[in-house]
Image (cartoon, rainbow, N blue to C red; front, side, top):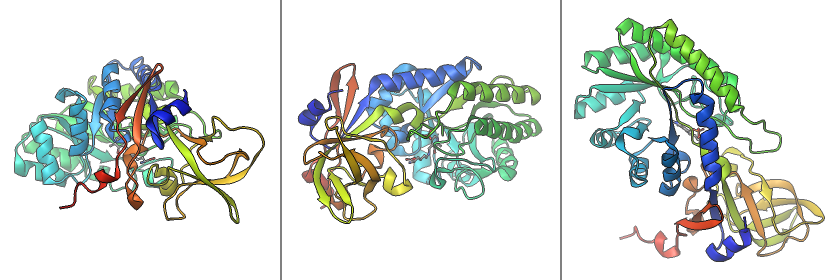
Length: 401
Ligand code: LLP
């Protein structure tokens, strides 16, 4: 990639995505599961990168989507997603959220029985799926563990029978089953264990109520390596372990062959994004700091989760020294990396790249400190296309009366 050319044309900071990588990630994950279980579909978790151009790439590969808010639902619709390919998984869904779900006529995984009660106040439904907290969770950081006793998500599994029973009594005839136990998990055996637990919880409920699930959605959470030390998640092994356990449990509870769904975000788009930044200043203080024109406002993950993103300097090399890489925001949390070996000859306007920012990058950016958000570019072969223009200072004032 000619980063200098992109920087000259679109300025910096700019998010750049590689279409080819997204397509490869999808194919790899799809085959890892579908070769072991035929009735399988991937619903891309739009929250990871809701740019409609990115959603469109995944739709063209055959994916559906999973949305977590009316705004994400709108992004999916704008990308051209057909309603039968849209799932909605929210959290503490409001009456307004639920109305939008019902109006859109899409499938949904409800976060709680109380969500179902709110939904019934709007309209009767013949379909319901509940998100179950299977009592276990795992993630790359404690903030992204979404199952287990500290998680705010889902119905505790001990209460799940009651929820399905009430739904059946309310006239529901079609059912789904859902869980999502954490994000950025690199451990295939954990997923197998969680699937086993979910299927035992669900199998018991479905048998006792004499109902069958249309689908079982085991969520996303498949991790990617961010550092040289991280292992790769072996998705072939993951697909085999999960599908074998899933099929075994289906047979044990005589549940037929419902659709198996997964909702990955990070695995599909994470490694396909690079953030191009320019050096704004190099300072000799008690440490050496390299300031760039992106910060925690542009990429929040390091400040929020102490996340590490690999850094490279495509046009500088030679002897290095230890430097701290930071943004321009007026907070000391605005440091991307400490004690990095960076080329001594780095100076103003040189380019610094932050890697693996395709997931939870742009979508978590803000206009903090009055900095408009960056542009987003999509690269396909060697064509680059603007898929979201850089915001301007003028844009920041459009909401004031
Ligand atoms: N499905 C549901 C219901 C979810 O809540 C999530 C992510 C996903 C699917 C997709 O998970 P993935 O495959 O991307 O791990 N901002 C954090 C990650 C938060 C994930 C929240 N839920 C980060 O930057 O690491």
